[in-house]
Image 1 (cartoon, rainbow, N blue to C red):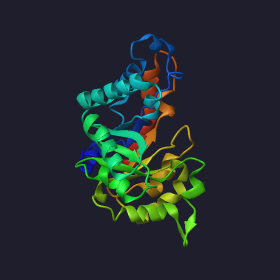
Image 2: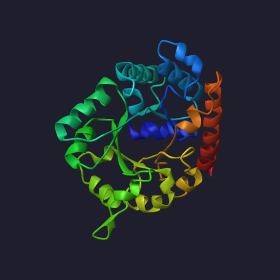
Image 3: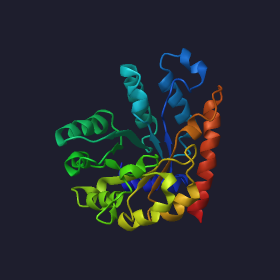
Image 4: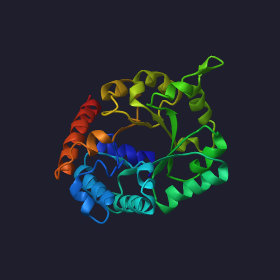
Length: 271
């Protein structure tokens, strides 16, 4: 999917909501556990109830890998369902990969070719030769960790090296890599005060923003400094939507929670 196609979806739906599909069998409604593939059935119900309110879905691969081959098969069924039923929706493999070049090429093939995701998250610590293999794929995006929402982000990301914070150096350096136009960046919603500085470095790049909702991030604060001329934001909410209810009406309640965010986003876009 191209960036322009994503922007078109945002404008059409008046939404830049991304829903995280982080499925924990200990948290899903108990009646689903009787089914052959409870993970996929949970995802399918969430997708069916919310697809008109969001523009992206983001399965975190750890929540599938934890269940072995069955979990990976559930992930494959989920992405196949999305690509078949809702090909207009942007898909993100939240895998946070990052390794030497030939390994990164294989990771890229796994997510872009075999599973046909539109994008994958990566960690930049090993530098450009670990990221450029992902960037080589046409009409695919690589979403690089820039400034994350966890407490440990302050251990390295905001530390100054020769007077400049590390996350700023990462952003600036990444712009020089081959096919850097295919880059997006992860910036946590709990770091809203940093968005103004980030936009000085990557003024039009899309930012994937986790942390709104259960982690305490504020949508209005993020949009105040993070919106760009082409919108440039994907706001992710996972637990606050998919686990809003453990009853049989879980998908319906998830849609209510998604609608609450979509209405706020529509108001922001209209104004």
